[in-house]
Structure formats: structure tokens, C-alpha cells
Image 1 (cartoon, helix red, strand yellow):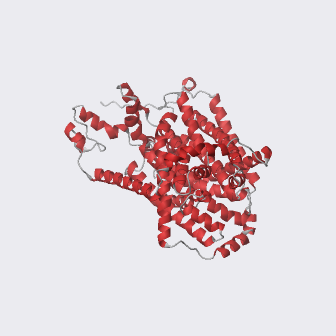
Image 2 (cartoon, one colour):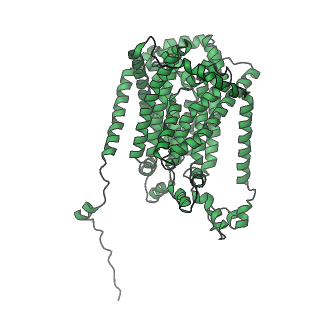
Image 3 (cartoon, rainbow, N blue to C red):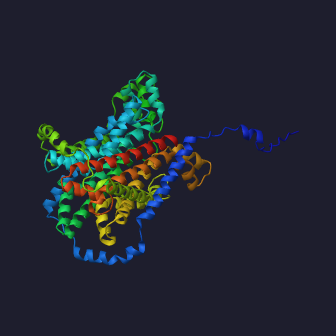
Length: 579
């Protein structure tokens, strides 16, 4: 006799169970942040409408572009020896300035991150210093250092370095705030010092993101060095500015093409380094336990459990102390020595006059007096604040135009989202091409087509913003935890469901931070584009600097600083609320 067990029918939970199910509590602060975000989108739409971008008018103005390119003729370049020297000098000052910023940004990020800072006062001070560095246009910093030092590479190095501290320290701090807190708290519970917490519990998790940030900033600095040439910083930017001023458009565009090629090479190097640090799987953070767990177990005298991520040399204390020279170690050591050689060569080619560091201090009081007190000069407050409003409108409109294309291209450029390898490569190549065009060059061409005003500046910033934000989005999506993605795949979810249900939610904080960073960047970039007629306050900044009205330069910088501080405050608040 056999007994047949019937499978019970699944029952749905009754209303009482549903009422007792945990629900996410209502948050007034979250509602306020959502409304603020919507208000910013509405303001951006209004700004875009006021800019008055008209495709039919641009098509009708195409005759201006034909006349311009007709005057350009063929592209021309400096002689080979001179060109190689300019390329070496430009790369040298950009690499040295970026390295200077990276070194300064490490302690600043440690103090600025909410989970590592010693106190709220330290955190607010570090954040303010970062915002101050970002708010000071690199052109203004270069102008100051040219007055204090002399023409050459050193003013450019210092301007690039101090200005880049703002962006690098912010991205460093954001990466520290997104780490897995388990390893750091475990080291603290074991009696480790704050320094040990940082070096062993934080640094291994954020290093890939930090390297990517430095390489990305180096790419931005390479394109930004074009603008520094307008205030006398040596290199390709100075030669290009002199070519355009002398109406030698063929030479100017030829040098711009060289800069584009350098940006492409820099992006390739960045991608190769990031791929090596993220590992062959192409995504997800390598955990603290994966890196150091086997060594700690072996050091305690117990054999380490062999796993796919646990190398054979960590099976005993002796093997942990005597790592073999396998292919992975040879590659890492070789890469380290190549990096050292590149840095030394970059510093050497800049031919820095080290004695200037001893004599510059005596010139600081005389230069500082020229920049104080701030004044609006003959223009008055109404004119200057209207110019600032135009700058903010340009930045908002450009950011709105760049958001959707950036999200689309950035998603296809991420390894864990792209449907095929060729789709990812195509998206990455397109982002490289967009970023390789300096905004100031694009603005000059658009001004020729559309005329002076806000339209040219907005389109130039929107085009450049797609490359900037798209790369940041791609990098952030590649660095999310793969666990939730694999869980949805195992449950039978489609690629779109995995993207919407696991990838985007994990990257939301980074997406918000990157969007506000783009807005922050666009406000400062809109100021620079005003130098060439792109609208906004940059026109008055150029006139003030050329007329030695440095008090007016200070007033403009203070207005930009207040604007960037407001944006930084909103970004920090929203990142905390949507955490």
C-alpha cells in the first residue's frame, strides 16, 4: 500500500499579513530632496528654452562655416622636432600637475569622507578646500602664478595641480564613502590604528577607482592645457592660441588635431590600466579578504583554504613571506617601474626652475594687493550678476542636454551592461572621440556658425559633457557589486531587468554625484568659454585680466565660488538622502 502525498496549494498572504509586512518609513527629507531634484530639472528646461537653440537657424548659417573652412585651407603643423618638443612639454606639465594634485588629494579625501574623518569640523573644512580649489578657474590660477613666477611650465603645473585637487579629492572621498565597512571596522575591533584602518581596510578597496580618477583627470587636464596657453603657459596650447590670434587657422586646427590624438592615446592607457586592476572578469570590487585574507591566515600558522582567488603561494607562512616571481607579479612590478620612469621624465622635460620656490614668497604680498579688494569696476553689480545668470543658465542647459545621451552611451560602454564586446568597444570609442575635442575649439567653430552668444557655449559644453559624464557612468556601473546581478540572472531575469533591478540601483548615488559634478564642471567651463565669446561672465573675466583689473577678477571668482558651494551642498545632501 502506497501513500500519495498531495502537494499543498500555495496560499496567498491574507490582508493582515500584508498590513504587518515591513514598509519603508516616509521621509520628509527624501521628499524634499526629490522635489529639489525636480525643481533643478525644471530650471534646466527653462534655461534650455531661454538659450534659444535653433537647428533651422544653424542650418541657415552653414554658409558661415563654409567660408571659415575655406579660409582655413589645408592643415599645417610645426616642424617635426619642434612638434615633438611641444608634445613632450605639454605631457610633462600635465602629468606633473596631475600627480601633484593626486598626492595632495589623499589626505584631503581622508578628512572629507564621512566614514574616515576625525570630526565634522575636519570634514567641512576639507570639503570647503576642495570646493575652493574647483571654484578657482585654472586660467586665473595660471594668471596669478605667471605674475608671481614667470612664463614657462611651472605656472601651468601649479595651476593644473591646485585646480585638480578639487575634483580628485571629491572623487576620492566619494569612493571612500562607498566602501564595504566590514574590513575597516574589523581592523578597528582588533586594535588597529586609524592609519592601519586606512591602509589595509580602505585603500585596497578604493585603489582601482582612485587610479581611474587620476587617469581621467589627467585626460581633462590635457584638454584644459589648451586654455592655459591663452595666459602664457608654454606648450601646445600657447602655440595654438598664437596661431588663432594671427589668423593662421590651418596651424591652429592642426595643433588641435594633435591634442585630440594625445587624448585618444591617454584614454587607451586609462582603459588598459583599469582593466588590469579590475581583473579579467571586468567588474566588481575585489574584496579585502581576497587580497589579504590568505596572508593573515597563513601568518597565524594555519593553512589557507584554497579558492580560485587564493594563490598557491599563500598556503604557509614561509610561502607568504617569499612570493614567487610569477607572471602577475612581474607585470605589476614592471608597471610600477614604468610609472616611476614616466614621472621622472615628465618632471625632467618641464625644466623646472627650482630656485623660484625660494624667491616666490617675497612676491606674494605685491601680487595679493593687486587682487584685493574685489570690485565690479565700471560694469556695476547688475551687469555682473546678469552675466553670472547667463553662465548658470548655460551650465544647466548643457547638463540637461548631456544627461540622456551620457546615460545611454555610458551604459553601453560598461562591460557588465553592454550586450556584446563590439557594442562596448564602439561606445567607448565614441566617448573617446567626444572627449578628445577641446570645448574651447568646438566653441570657436560654433561661434563662427551661430555667432556670439549663449547658444554656441551651450552646445559646446553639452557635447563635451557627453564624453565626461558618459565615461564616469560607465566606470561606476562596471564597479558595482556583481552579486545582485548574478542573483537576478539565476532567477531568470532578462538583461533589461538585471540592469534596472540591480545595476542602476547600486549606481544611483554615483549617478547623482556625477550629474552634480558635471553641473559644477559646466559652470566653471562656461566661464572659460566666455573668453572666446561663448556668453556669460567669462567675457568680463578676460577683459579684467587683459586690463590688469585684478580686483574685478577677484569679484568674479567669488561669485563663482558661492555658486559652486551651493551646488556642492546640494550634491552632498542628495547623496546622503538617497543612500
